[in-house]
Image 1: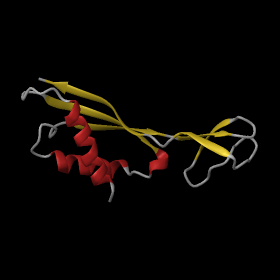
Image 2: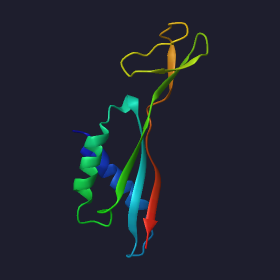
Image 3: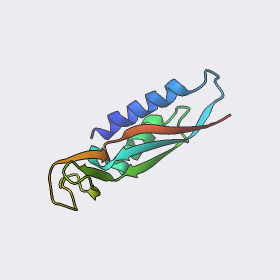
Image 4: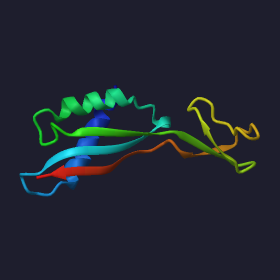
Length: 114
């Protein structure tokens, strides 16, 4: 379950951006997760909840935005959605495609309150 180690990394990233004052608590953390990452959102939330227990992130919400897979065809230039196991152009059927969305895994926003 690699989601727990990813949750640990998210927590480290969040803590690195928090102000040095001790009275800061985190309300929510927004994370973009691409379909091609094979990360299970529920498992990531669970790992986050377990690892934040007893910390300044304990009551924070992990808000996961799932980003669909999109590919651009190198033959016809068309952009289409796709499934991680079927990468092809929906317009011309070519497998010569480039992934342009769906590989994201980033903390996009941290909401704090005092």
